Every structure is written in structure tokens, then in C-alpha cells.
Image 1 (cartoon, rainbow, N blue to C red):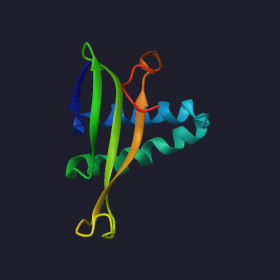
Image 2 (cartoon, rainbow, N blue to C red):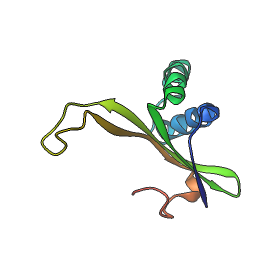
Image 3 (cartoon, helix red, strand yellow):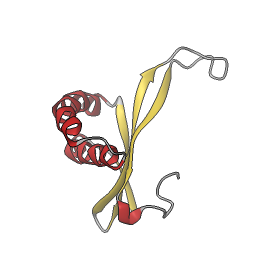
Image 4 (cartoon, rainbow, N blue to C red):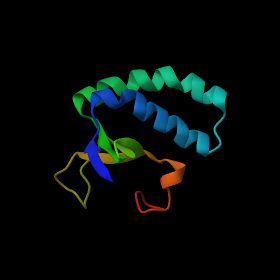
Length: 106
């Protein structure tokens, strides 16, 4: 397996993985269809400015999983008194044939 960071050219792959993630959770197709253009418009500038980042996992050049992180403003906290950013994990997806192999947390 190989890993690499997400880039702007991965927008459609991220979108597809996100839809599959929600489809696996039982979300209706009409909801997924309605979300598609809005998610694409939301994600594109965030990939460009680096506030959305993450990694993909590949098996022989075929993407089989991915994770996205969103950098968000967050007030300093007693655990992190000088930091005003946090990472929010979203869009964790692994292709069904690759699940339960240690590519993502259970």
C-alpha cells in the first residue's frame, strides 16, 4: 500500500468517497444527489487554501481509501493554551474489499 497527501485534483475522488461513506450509512440517494454540487463548491476553495487536507491510500495505483481533515478555528483551551486551531476529521472511507485490514480505525 502507498499513501500520499490530497491535492486539488482529487476533488472528484473525495466527493465520490464521501458519497459512498454516506451511502454505506443508509443515506437516501436523493439526499446525496442534492448534496453533490454544494459539497463540490464548498471543498474546492478549501483544497486550494489548505484548510482541508488529508491522505489517500493506494493499492497498485488504485485509490482504496482516504481521510480528510478540516482545519478550524478553536479557542485556546487549558490542554492547548496557545493554539487557536484544531483539526476536524471527516470523510473517512475505505473501499469495502479493503476494510478490516488496519487501514482505518474500527
